Amino acid sequence: RPLVGADEGDLVVGLSAPAGPIAASAAYKQAGQALSVARRRGRVLVEHEQMAAGSVLPLLADDAVRAFADGLLRALHEHDATGRGDLVASLRAWLSRHGQWDAAAADLGVHRHTLRYRMRRVEEILGRSLDDPDVRMELWLALKATSAD
Image (cartoon, rainbow, N blue to C red):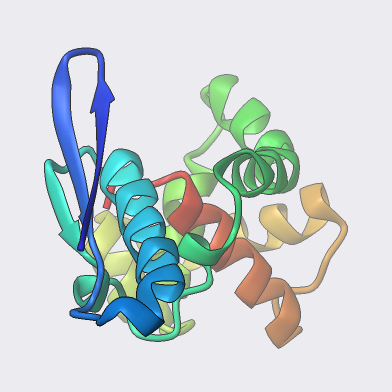
């Protein structure tokens, strides 16, 4: 069943999996989650089944996700605003390549040593180790929450 919302005059639709009357409450929640993802991604329609398997973002309130992401990434964005390196993009590339230095550096068009330096700066600025899988997961979640796709 669809759940429809209007954003500044644009129609936005979240669609649940097919459900009968007994599962109407669950279908409504699914449609709401899909609608939230559609708004976040700037899409007209998102089906619940299209959402990333295992993604927790649709299950969380938009305000809570945004506050979490903004708080975690704020210092990196402030650093990037000074023009002394693109730490957020570097972190995104490094995490998306599962810590593979050469591949992530190639994506960014920088030398792997430059990327290594940037990741050390990320650790210094955040006061957290990128060797910790929980830290990497939290940073990836924050980056996904603030990306358009």
